[in-house]
Length: 299
Image 1: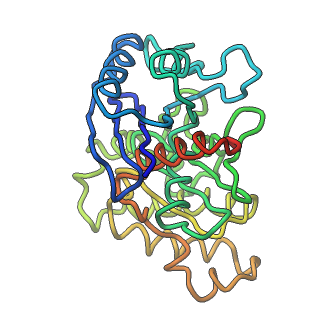
Image 2 (image 1 turned 45 degrees about the vertical axis):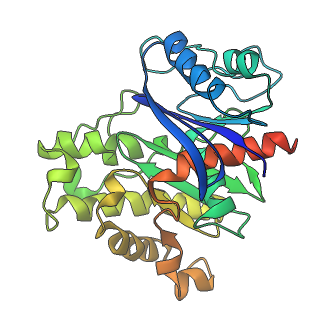
């Protein structure tokens, strides 16, 4: 059985693993995200201490340069993470391990993992959105990960303000209260109510407002990408009552226009939590490695 390496590269920690899939993770480590050099050196030390891998997959926080012909391919671009702007991720790993590397955003990796082994298995078009300290989304369209000018930045979709939320200033440094992240990510909830989202009671009005914003953004994504399934992960989505509310508001906002049985009869199976639980990112990085080893196109 082929053995792959995986990195889920986040702003607070890098998770490294060796395995072949969700049921075969043979070793795993968490490394605090410090400087690029120190963090990647620890990642290399981990992989060099393991049995030889055939390829490495990296799902990384962004924004990223994913176009191979560009000078900064494999780099983090203009990120608010101090010290990481223009950090080269792929270069040091490729030199240190001498294996093919699949490189993509953390959310694109997650949707790929869900399509390979999780809630989007056997589907060729799906989206994965994580709602936590930020909001990000990955898209699989026609069996390929969505790239283009750069890569999807779903969290910064502009969404209409809810009438009962007109006074909130928002938390996005770029768009204030005009974008999804600025209105509905974890920091927005904390800023609005003065408490971390996970401490809010289940009957708090925050959750109804949150569901309306999520459904509003999902309406645009459903109309533009026509996904066969919508997968919602991240810390905020651990609040179970959000799912029925989001489904209700999404149905209302689509207003019967999209004539699909998944929306009319099976919406509980259309907007769903990740099939891989909290492991979508790291397992998705294994899927990126698998594609790289098989020389499949990155998108």
